[in-house]
Amino acid sequence: MAGEKSPRAFSMEELPGHLIGEVLSSGRLAAGDLARLEGTCRALRPLAEQAASRLCAARMACSVIGPAARGELLARCGGSWKKVLRFLQSVEQSFDTVHTSSGNVRTLSLIYY
Image (tube, rainbow, N blue to C red; front, side):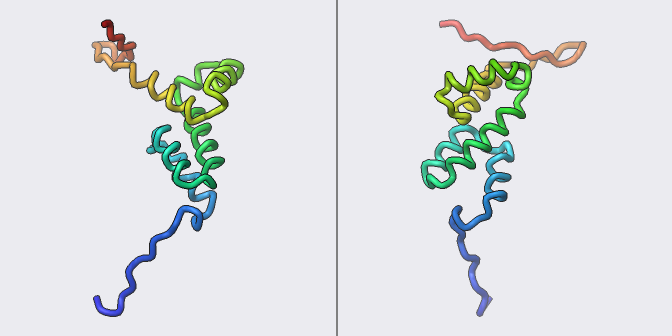
């Protein structure tokens, strides 16, 4: 329509930190997405790392290991929660769900070469 302004694009730096944190922690982004976003804007590094930490804590694979093991895993990933998240996502993707008469069972998929 005549006289209407087109919506203005916002840069990530203009958005409030808590809003960015909510988007990053929504669970819809993979570890690679967080890393790419961080690469476009260095100011987002702490928020991306915090979001990855929260996403890791929400994963079943992370909840079954104790605090010491989580700390060791973080250390093995160079202190990067994004790398821990990528590892946990890989582990979860390697499981298949098998439907049985007594319910669904998750099994580990192993590929032999």
